[in-house]
Image (tube, rainbow, N blue to C red; front, top):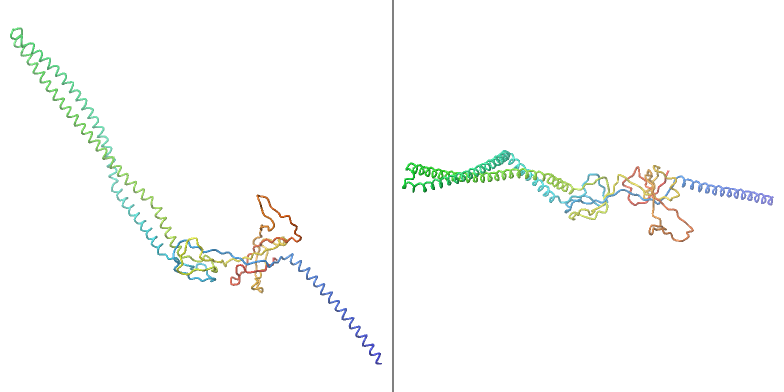
Length: 409
């Protein structure tokens, strides 16, 4: 009885051990099969839904550069602080630019006053211009008239000279006749009456000669007077021409002054713009970074003071192997996880795919690629950047350069 009991127990133990071995074998088969299935699924999912942890957060940022120089009098922001669009970033001492604006406005007012004065002068001298034109015309006419009078007087002088010559010839003839006839009267070759007639002819010739001399002197006097009048007419014409030129110069001065208006207005606009540039505000919602200055620093145009990170749009730059790019398309949805917050999933969309990276094993020399003659047993596939725009970013969690994991769906 005891031996039979021991035999039964051994049989039951062997059966239990065989059952356990069978169960263990089945479990190993199931685990191995499940692992294989999981591996296959992982490979398929990785091919269908490319995934990478070689990704970093990115955002647009700008360096804040002053456009005018001066001392910083206000700097209400702090490093790594959040600012909203329109918030004051800094203010440069505006007093020099206020003075410049006032000076530009004063220069413009002075110019307008000069233009107004010139316009009044022109309005007052317009009649003078017309009078100068009329005087010039009259003077020109006077010069012409005086010239004609001079010509007439010259002709009169010539005629008077000719008359003097003729009278002088008559006088000589009468004198000679009297000198010849008077000796003949004593010899009674001629009568007293003939001698008296000859003497009368001499007196008439003498009178004609004297009259011709007087006429010549009068003609010469008239000629001298006409020459004087012509000189006066010439002087009047010169004076009229000078008056007309002065009046025209006044008009030209007004044109020159008016031509300065655009330059004066441009100076005012520039001074007003420089004054506005003393206050710089945030162009968008952003984080301040790299702020290493304080109030009292001197700002130089073109020298960045700090950086603003645009928080309105965030990106993730994911570097995917070239073998995965065939499953990535523009507009494809992407699941994004931040390394700092792996429990949060953010939605993204593929915005662009890189088309070029710098090869590591080659270079260009003299226009031809230079390839090293080496054999690489393992060739790593290149990675191309894929730009993913985040559709629901949380500005408090996103930081430029932080690591991310992306899965393209």
